[in-house]
Length: 492
Image (cartoon, rainbow, N blue to C red; front, side):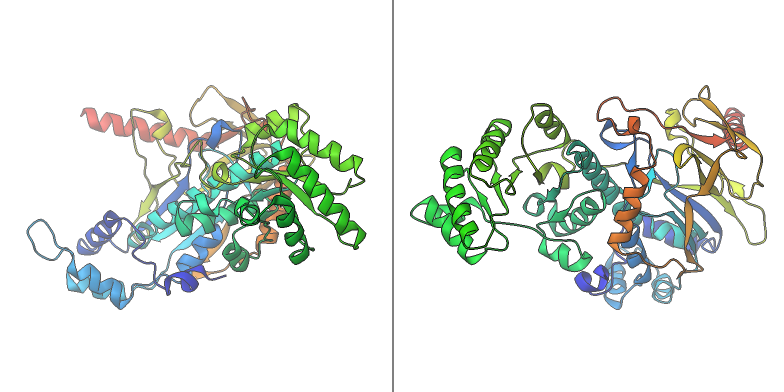
C-alpha cells in the first residue's frame, strides 16, 4: 500500500501547519537547523474514559516519510506567501534548501496494534531540529485519529463479546481520508470487515455488504424484491427486513430462505435496522429456528455503540452480527485523542544532551524530559506495569516507578522476577527505513495477542482499572529538578 502516491501524486510535504515551516525557516536563518533534538509523541488520557488505548497509524507515518519531499509545485506555492509587510515570507535560498533536503533523523515507535497508556512516547524522533519540526503535524494527524478509532473499535468488539462487528461508516465519515483511515483502524481494533471497497483494495480488509431499503422500495412489493435479490446474489444474500413492517419482512425473508434452501442455496442473514432491536431480534430468532433455518444469522444496525450493544446483550437480544457506522468512524462521543509532540532534549554536535521541559499551571501538561524508552513488564505472560526511563541508563535489578501525575502513586518492580521488553522499536535510521512494513493481518494479530495479555479490569466500559505506568525514579527526580530550576530562574 502506498497511499501517498496512489491518492496524492506523491507529494504531501505541505500537509502541515504554517508554523512548522516558519519555525523551520527560523532554525535555518539562525543557523540552528542542524542542532540535534529529541521529540516525543504521546497522549495524556485514555479516550472514552477507558482503561487503555490501541496505538495505530504507524504505517501511514512510514508511507508519508518515505515519500516526503518538496515538489516544484510545493516550493512555487511557498514562494507566493507574503508577510505582514507584503514581502516574501521565505527567502529563495531557504526554498532551495528545502528542495534538496535529505532526511537524516532516527525514528523509534511502538508498533501498531500494541496496547498503550498515557504519557508513554508512542513515537520518538531524534535528529536535526528542523527536520524533527517539519513532521510534527502529519505525525499527530495520523497517529491521533487512527489510535482513537482503533480504540473505539476495540471497545465495541469487547461489548459484542467477540461476535462479528461490521464497519460501514463510509457515508458518515469525515471525508475521504477520514473514511479510509477509519476503516483501516477499525479493522485493526477488532472489526471483521468493512463496507468501504476502496479500503478493501488499499489495505486488504475483507469487505461486506448487502442491499439498502431503496432496493426493496424500487419493487412493487417486498417479496419480489427479496426473491430477485436472492436470485442475483445467492452467495451473499442478507435481506433487510424493516422497510415497511419488520414482522412481515421476517415472514417474507423466511419464505425466500426456504425456497433458496430447496435449491441448494442458503440465506446468510436477515438485517434489522430500526425499532426495538432486542424485541425484533428475538422474534427473528424464534421464527427462523421454527422454520428450520437455524444457520441464518441476525444482523443488527441503527446507530449502535458499545453501550447500546452492552444493553442489548443484557436484554438477551438474539443478535449474531453487529453493523456499526457513525458512532465508530466519527468516534462520536470523543472526536479527538489529543496526542501532543514535545521537545524533550537538545544538543550541539559532540555535546551532551540538554534536557528540556515545558512548565504549565496544570501538572498534567508538564512533559517528561530526556531520551525516553518504555519497558513493559510481564508476570506469567500478563502485563503488570510499564516503566518510562532514560534510554542510556544501565540495567538494574529493581526499579521504583512513580506516576508522572501523582508522585504518591509508586510501585516497586523486581526486574529479576519479571519479564521485561522495550516497546519503542527502530523504524528509521539516518532517514532510511529499517523496520519491515507489516501487513494489516499481522498488526491485527498483534492487537489480539495484546488483548490476551491485559487484565480484564482494564476493559471495563465504566470505571476501568488504572494500569500502572510510571517514571523510573531517577527520571522522576530529573524532571522535578528541572521544574525547580526553571521556577527559581523565573523568580530571579
